Every structure is written in C-alpha cells, then in structure tokens.
Length: 85
Image 1 (cartoon, helix red, strand yellow):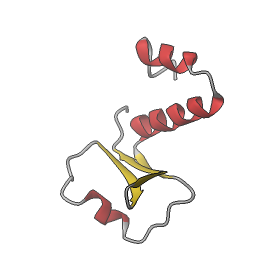
Image 2 (tube, rainbow, N blue to C red):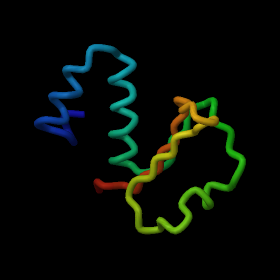
Image 3 (cartoon, helix red, strand yellow):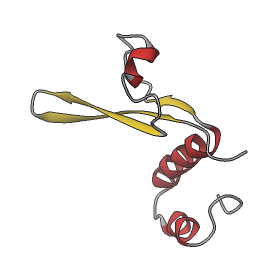
Image 4 (spheres, helix red, strand yellow):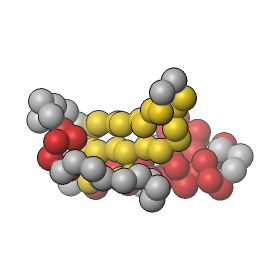
C-alpha cells in the first residue's frame, strides 16, 4: 500500500481497525493498480462478462451491487482498468 498510495490513502489504511477492512481496501487497491475483475465468491455469473461493461467502454471503474427487491445484498463485483505501469 505504501509504495503506491502515500499520504491520506495510506494513513486511512493504517487506521482501519479490523483486518477484514484492510483486506477490502487492499482488494480495491490491487484492482486499481493491476486492473481486472473481482467478484465475491457467492456471486453467480448469469451473463457473459462482456455484457457487464455495456456502453461503458471508456470507464475506468465499474461497481455492481446486487439487490433483491428492496433489500441490498452485500455481494459486490468490481471491474477496473490498470492505472499504474
């Protein structure tokens, strides 16, 4: 984290009180740096990954949150293009 995110972002990471929160932030940072797709293990892919992008071909970051009726489910899917060489 410190190598790529100095200052406020790294300070916020260090202040996170739980390891699970640090793991989440590391996941987001890795996607930001490397690019790629992350999806929770309880997510079921019912459409091809190319349909997730839709018309957002120039987007750098896409987040999808599942909903069931009026209830938000905590499953998360993130796609990101790489931002560091």
